[in-house]
Structures are given as C-alpha cells and as structure tokens.
Length: 325
Ligand SMILES: Nc1ncnc2c1ncn2[C@@H]1O[C@H](COP(=O)(O)OP(=O)(O)OP(=O)(O)O)[C@@H](O)[C@H]1O
Ligand code: SF4
Ligand SMILES: [Mg+2]
Image 1 (cartoon, rainbow, N blue to C red):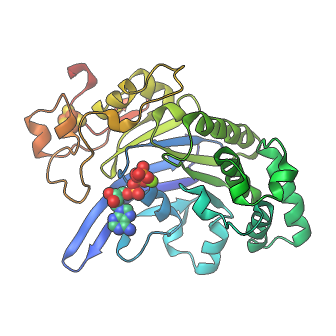
Image 2: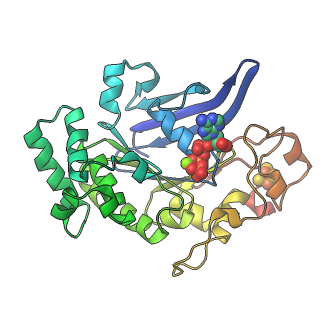
Image 3: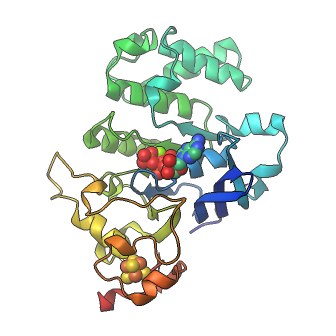
C-alpha cells in the first residue's frame, strides 16, 4: 500500500456511562492510500457506521465517544483540529454518502440546488457552484441530468437519488470518499453500478475510497482491499483476491459460502449465516465468533485472538490456521 491518506489507528468507541464504559468498536485499524479502494464488510451492528462517523467527529455524543485511538488524514490528527478546519475536512476533503440518502436530502428543494448549496458552504461562488453542479450530475451517468437537476427528491428513483448523492459528494473534489451503503433501500445491482461508477471517476482524481457494505458480493473485484468487521473489530483484512481465494478467518469463509453464484440477481444476506451477531456490549471473554464457529475449541472461549499476519497480505484474528479447519 502507498502512504495512507486516511488512517484509523486502534480506534475504540463506546457508550460512556457513569460507572465505566461499554465498548462497541474495539481497536479498529484501517488505512487507505490515494487512488485505493477499501471495502468494509460486516453484519448489522458490527460497528461499521460508528467507525465512519468517528472519522468526521460526528458520533452522537453523549452517550457515544471515541475512547482511544487516532484518525489521521494525510498525517493530520483529526481529533485535534479546530472547528474551522473540521468544517473544511467535512464534505470538502472527506465526503460521505450516508446510509439513508433520502433523509440526507431536503425534500423541499430541487436536488441541483442542494448540490450548489453544498458547494457554496465550502466557499464556491454561485457561478462556479452552478457550473460544477451541472458537470458532476453529468459525470454520474444520469440519463437526463438537466431534468434531474431541477427535480425534487420524491420525483426521482432510488438509483437516481444514489447517483445524486455521489454527485454531491464528488462536487468538492474530496481526497477521500466514504460511502455507507444503504442496507435495504437499493438492490445489489445498483450498488455495484454505483461502485463501478465511482471507480471509473477515481482513476482520474486519485481519490481514496472506503466502501461500507453488508454484501461481500458488491465489493468483489471492485475494491483493492477488504476489511471484515465482526462485533466491533476487524477480524480479517486482506487484498480482495486473497480474501476470495484463501480466507483466513472462519467468519469470512462463512460469508463467502453464503454468496450465491456470481450470476444470481438475488444474493443472500450475511445474516443467513447460522446464529445472530452478539451484542457488542455483552461479549464476555474469548473469541466473539465462537458460538457460531464450527472450528471453535476450548481456547476460543478463554481468550480473544489478536489480528495477526497470515502471510500473502492477509491478517486474521483467529487461533486456528486455515490448514486446521
Ligand atoms: N447512539 C447510539 N447509542 C447506543 N448504541 C448505539 C448507538 N448507535 C449505534 N449503537 C450500537 O452500536 C453498534 C454498532 O452500530 P453501527 O451503526 O456502527 O453498526 P453497523 O455495522 O453500521 O450496522 P448496519 O449494517 O446495520 O448499518 C450497534 O450494536 C448499535 O446498536
Ligand atoms: S478463534 Fe476459535 S472461535 Fe474464533 S474464529 Fe477462530 S476457531 Fe473460530
Ligand atoms: Mg451502518
């Protein structure tokens, strides 16, 4: 990997209580370099959105807070920048496409105006904002960008809204794009199309992309690296090809097994893996995956494994080597 543009180091997020904290995100390390794409995959509740919100200091605080760790944008520690700098970073240098696009748009304003307003909030003149809005709406592959520009959100389909959100995110030419995928609003075909679109635009800008999803199938072949999250931790991290060819964590293996054939339009969801994800605040000791893991042994109930190098670009938090599965 080239020098990271965005680096999340040993991030711990928790619910702050009077008598001790409940940790939800427990030591996440993630890095993405210029021009690279990283997929973050995990079931509902694994801590993906909280991790992304922490990057921009947008956690609902209280009760949530970053308990420990660092978030570095090109080496700059975002925990300690002043409000003015933070406003420049948010939406300017790091753009986020939120999980629920409908709730991030104003229903009473044409979408083109909303893109213009976002640009003006980052110092653009009206003239530049309106030119740039037309340009990005064209770039995101909308069939009739002029019509979309003057439409209200309710007049557009889910796929069109998603493209508008990407246009809005790209308008300020961010260095980092974070997309937190909607879970149910869009089908995976649209998700893949949007990610393909972002990849093609990324080639000319060198932007770093973090793509958060439930569905490993969406990021397959479209990202360079994948981080798999489970119960608030990254349990496997690898290049995409390694992860698909040679998973080194049983959870990843189960995720891969739950993907139907490549041609299926109806991919299964991660929760088709037997059992349910644990409550991150009630983990106890041991490996959090143990109750669902077919390879669990005594040690797994006693101590949580650290994320260790498994060679060939793979890291996994598991006591067992894949050769023992
Ligand atoms: N404001 C909050 N107060 C208390 N707990 C919260 C809060 N927000 C999230 N949580 C808890 O933190 C955990 C992680 O939530 P998060 O939203 O990061 O999950 P996620 O991986 O993004 O899930 P999904 O795929 O459903 O979006 C969940 O167990 C959730 O219940
Ligand atoms: S540490 Fe044990 S329970 Fe956890 S994933 Fe590995 S084998 Fe399964
Ligand atoms: Mg989420």
